[in-house]
Image 1: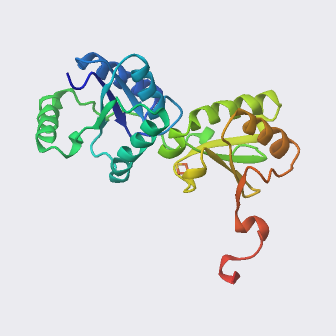
Image 2: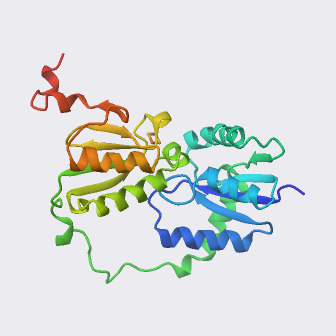
Image 3: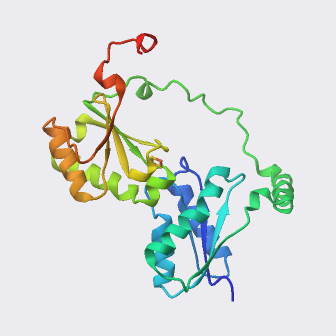
Length: 252
Ligand code: FES
């Protein structure tokens, strides 16, 4: 029988954990075969981890099914190659793994969605009487910080376990007593994906690849705490970091 398990994939970087878990429950209860739902960004289960988990559980005919209206074209194009990389790394040719057609481009699916919308229009929530919420004071000023850390959680860094990077980075900045000096933000793709997972550090303008826990520990201790540079992990220094006062238009 094909498939014997499904990995539903969504691209939804801003979806809350609560909504993601709801989607996971909904797809699991609607699917007649074992399934998982993951997103291709962020800090939760990555695509390789999901494929490994299903294969380790004895499944060998996997369907990877994109979900979303629409699923981005670049990610759709990227998925088969990423799966091929996983297959090569795992060395398991017996796994039959296919990528499903995107339901968002299926006219029948869209027609169903429109039909559902009209059928449920009576349940829509009115906005009359809702308090305007823009301009709350807590969102007025930037917090006090020394290091601005941009941690890439784009799909390719996520594939390379950026989820653990963010987790370990937070643990280490806490352990080394500098978490209140660090403003950490997740970003989408920063381009040097092949060297990911990675973090960009400002205002120093230094970009580091942090492949494992030991690298993160060195990064926090040597770079953030001691102010040194780690040449073996440094992949880029932003031009403005060398001459911050030079206006862009005067640069050669
Ligand atoms: S996905 Fe992280 S640099 Fe591209």
